[in-house]
Structure formats: structure tokens, C-alpha cells
Amino acid sequence: MPPRSSQWLMTAAFVIVCSSSAVAQEAYLQQIGSHNGAANVAFGAKHMQSVFQAGQRNVGAQISSGSRNSSALIQAGVQNSALTVNQGSLNAALAVQVGGLNSSFIGINGHRNTVGLYQQGVWNQSSVTVTGNDTDVSVSQFGVGKRLALNVSDQMVRSSSSPTTNSRSPTGRFKVGVIQGRSSAPASYSIARAPDGSIVINP
Image 1: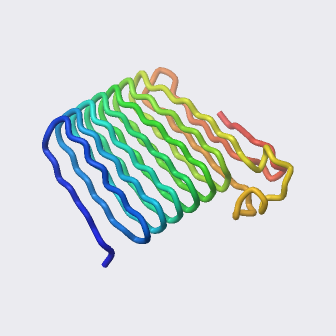
Image 2: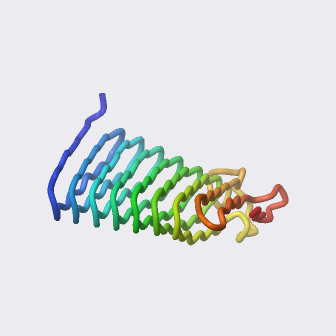
């Protein structure tokens, strides 16, 4: 069995950081209360980590650098902030926020990474930035007053070099899906690259 670490906290104004290096580490963190801060940081390969926060004005972060790392960040309450950063390849991250006035920020750099974001409630906002290729991003927002800033920059389109020059993935595929519901103007967006290399946006 791989090494594991876990924390369960019921407090206020508490900050804790779980870090993993080498290979196949596990870290689980739970916080209940307000003004808490938590961060899971993984360097290396095959790490598994999760953060759960319930309350208000909590800050959570999950940062992965390497390959085949998995992380989940779940927040329930109001005025919570979540940060997800993936650097490398074959990493998977999930961020879930339920409540109101929550903010989520996602940044991806590399290839074959997978990130999912789900927000439910009122006045939630999220920002997603993707640089790389062969990446899957899914954003779902339900409620009212939601905002989304989406920025996709594909290496394969910007460069005239061969696919293998830009990354270890020769396909150059990436997919971004956005679903927004339960508002005055529900919308669903899909951003993908056509076989000819062009980017197609389907509202």
C-alpha cells in the first residue's frame, strides 16, 4: 500500500499544506469552519490527493507537476476560493463548489491533462486557462449570476513545427466543453480543433 496522510479539522483561521514528492503518495484533508486555507502540492508521478472544505471564506489549492497525478478539491458554503494548477502530462484534477459567491481559477500547461469544474449556486465565477494540447476541460455552472472567463491557447495551431516537436502527443487534440444552466439565457459551448488544424467554436 502506498503511504497515506490525512487531516480532519473543525476550526477557523487554520492553514495546512500537504505536499507529495517521489512516486505514489496519498494525501486527504478536510476542513470545517471559516477562514481556512488548504493546499495539496504534488511533484512527481502517480500521486492522489483531495481537499474538502465546508464553511465560508475558505481558500483551497491543488497543484500538480509531473505525470499521472490525481487531485480533487470540494468546497461547500459561501465566498470560497479554489485554485487548480496542472503542469506536465496525464494529470487529472476536479474542482467542485456548491453555494454562493464562490470563485475558481484553473490553469493547465502540458498535454493529455484532464480537468473538471462544477459550480452550483448563485453569483459564482470561474476562470480557465489552457495552454497545450490533447487536453480535456469540462466546466459546468448552474445557478444565477454566474461568470466564466475561458482562454484556450493551442500550441499546435500557433507553431509551424511538427506535432512531436511541441509535445510528446502527436495527435494535437484538445477539447473544452462549457455548460451553463438555470439562468435567463442558458448556454453550452464547445471548443475543439478541426482535422485541418483550425479551431472551431460551436455555441
